[in-house]
Length: 146
Image (cartoon, rainbow, N blue to C red; front, top):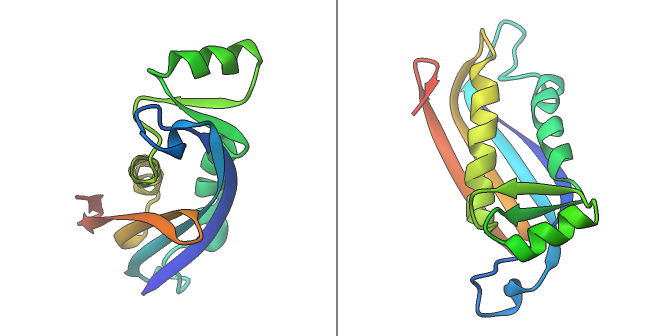
């Protein structure tokens, strides 16, 4: 059985290495689908959506209306700090691929803490625009993600 839940947030970023428009400060209306495949628990659920929200929403709230800033982008980082703006500093360039990998890792760690579930696969799909997305999956084996 597979369940899926959609989450949305607004976030700014830039790609300082980029030769085109993405080098500029800009933002996206991100949309993420979290899909979990697995067996049903004793209540007949892969995972209760309420419990999934308790895992995902605090992570998304950290990013919502923040600027995702690569730690090497000192000019922008100094500006954000000096002006007391909400930011998330990361050690990767803020491509949708890297964001997807990062959020998959964060969700993996939280899901591993849940006992009594028969999770088989976790998939995170993040849209940075209506027609551009990144998707990454992680399989589980005997309760562990591979």
